[in-house]
Amino acid sequence: MAKRTFDLFWSALGLVVLSPVLLLVALLVKLEDGGPVFFRQVRVGRGGRPFRIWKFRTMVVDAERRGGAITVGQDIRITRIGRYLRSTKLDEFPQLLNVLSGEMSLVGPRPEVPRYVDHYTEAQRGILGLRPGITDLASIKYRNESELLGQAEDPEATYIQEVLPDKIRINLAYASRAGVWSDFLVILATLGLFPPARIRTGQA
Image (cartoon, rainbow, N blue to C red; front, top):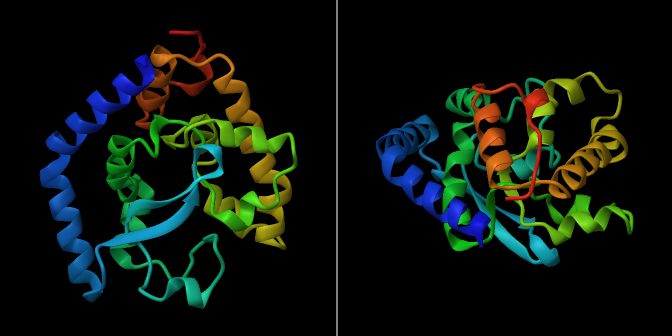
């Protein structure tokens, strides 16, 4: 209950306070190429239930037909404004709507697309018992994931076999000890205001 109250309060406040920024970003995305402002993609949520995530669109309109499900290095499908939004993580802010609806939490494992969830082992599927989030310690560790995968011979295989299992390990370890205070510190760490290595979790 404490975590849900935390999520509701801060997501609602965030949408109100950030509304001028969100409106400006929406305008810039629209002016880029006249396409949709938002990108809605099916992700797998808590209990394996699918839902549509909210994101500002950062790629060309038909990006999914032009390439794979992951972006690697300087992906040519990324728009000019999209590159800036990705570097600042502003493209993720509309997910505050997913938090308000209860589909996501502010802090929790990033929700995956179904094709990658299909690769989970039985043990890894334990991650589906958690409510997905906008940010987490794994996201901070892999902040430069696109560049990292760009150096791999087979980016998708590297993601499935190395990056994804490590993200799941990090999130399961965090969830076993997490509380509202540690969630708050993860948010600060995401914003660069607190060192991730100093986060000590405890029940709240």
